Image 1 (cartoon, rainbow over the protein chains, first blue to last red):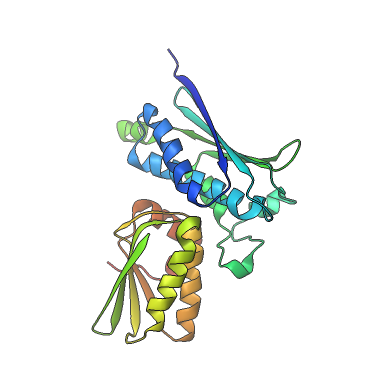
Image 2: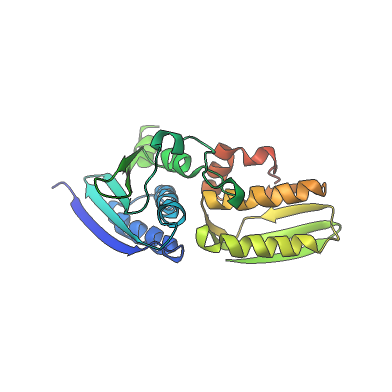
Length: 149
Length: 102
């Protein structure tokens, strides 16, 4: 029978919750028997998405972040949603080294890292406020590659 | 996160320990600037063998330190990055300014 599961959690957009979000998603993904590398990829991508919420979404107050993970077979879908100020030009924001805060020693590589570590990344404006970053990854590809070698 | 350091034969050895993300970035910046300001060395080696996690926020921290040390002509080298950290370094081109040493 095909593996199907989900989890959802909300938390305040505080930097201390980045570690919580990473561990939370990694713990949920363990049921797919990922490799250490795959878990590392997922943790890094989640950290980047949550950092965006913490640093950019709420300039005046710490709003909330909703983290949802869905498992469908060997596929994991991770959604990181905020209700903040949003992104005016999403395509521009996804360009490597682009940052709206050049004075704060920011690398501007957040979305590039997400794209590099996951199979696919979508960034969409929410109907009301904020954005949702949706990331996809198929677990077990590394094992397949080893098996086929 | 915490940072260990020592000077040996004009080289400042810095070991980053724990997790470097948005939450620990300010502490890392302040601590590294403090260690770097003490002087008594001509090059810096940053050892990442005890760094359990780093995302692109860490790249910003390291580039910031590189800019400050470049003014003083003090080169910075990286050693022992994890596979994930190495992946981020390669995609951001960080090794062009902070070469990896074995």
